[in-house]
View 1 (cartoon, rainbow over the protein chains, first blue to last red):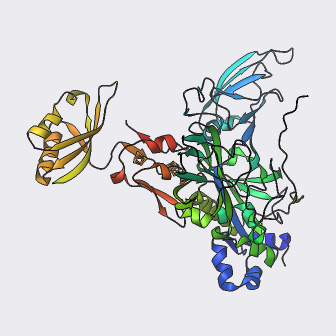
View 2: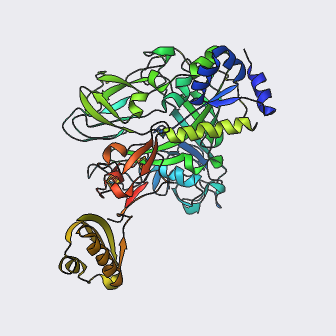
View 3: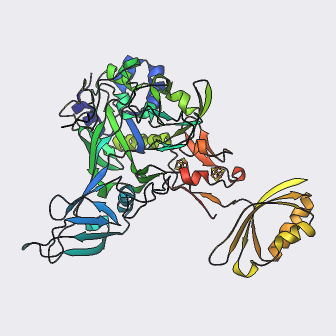
Length: 394
Length: 136
Ligand code: SF4
Ligand code: SF4
């Protein structure tokens, strides 16, 4: 048994034993669980994939004369300005003004909020255009100016939902191609898409939220961020398999971090043909090895994590709840699987390569004594369902 | 008989050179053009397969170079930017020739083998991160 304080003391004296969630598997196999639990202090987990539920709050500072922005665009992408005078919220999925969307189906969706966020983090110049009705104290009615992230007072990323514990595998059983947030799916079960870092993914290594909770310090695209709430659609009441690992979407995290300190490599705008814009962000979360049980859960392997295959041409949209079959991440990573007796090529939207890189970057930061762990102030709800939206007459 | 895939670039002043005619008539090669393009700047790109005696192909390449045509044996017109690629793997089932492929099953690293690329442009439509581009 270890405490957060003991682990942090070891980190500060640069003596902490840190492993990533991939290498810990063999390590525990070799050493045995009890012995390894005494040695290992931290296991780092990570993920890199698109998450539409992303955005950022920006504060511009005041122009002269001052202006209370009531409508605004950055690089022609509409922002939400229904907050304070020079605060705005930029959403990752917002399209650029005049984007034809799916008018010429399937649309290309080349540029939107996610790309503006990528540009900001990369230090590129962006254009602000704002309008206002003007008030006695904020007389300016129009503004057009160019800025970089360094000109802003704050640029705070918020991901109301990130780090989905597990995720659907999308396939197309119809006879027409479909374009989804899980990519272009060819007709007749030709290809499928999954989206999870599997054995490296944070909440698959802490399936019952024993260490990851509200207040947990995280690595968010290179900046020090934190879990500020349960993620939207957090649905911990779900089917669970070996080691309580969910076999469907399940838990999620609400994340936030300072965009000024982020690395461009890990904040990337996403264009999904026929679907829209999103943002991919790299997240790393350390798991303190407080006891052998927590360590044991971090040794989860790709082959023990299964996900449901769902028909995105019908069952997903119509909410039928039908699951075609299940596959584990070891099968998926092999590149070809069999579904309903047919050979199906595998695609993915989550990058295991990047996740591994992030897990190692975080591991290095902890080993160097630069990243301390924080004890969550609240545990995430463990037995929470998900509501649906009913369409009522009145 | 050997087959060779080349990308030819014609600068503005060479665009009207009847190169394909020479390849057939003078070097006795079988030609298969699979992409061609002229830009508004009046530069031209031509992606072709040459089939014939190895010696004739060699001579043909020298002939083309002499006539100011840039001959590219590696670059087929589709570019994959390694630094921009996140190795997400979304393009993998859409690449018909496995020119884009998973190099390592364990780390899921993605790589590009230009020699296998047929320029179908499917990866360009299916890369969410804009890592693939084409001159066509
Ligand atoms: S252009 Fe076609 S063949 Fe070439 S890499 Fe892209 S998908 Fe593969
Ligand atoms: S879809 Fe694009 S980013 Fe993803 S692996 Fe292919 S080339 Fe790389």
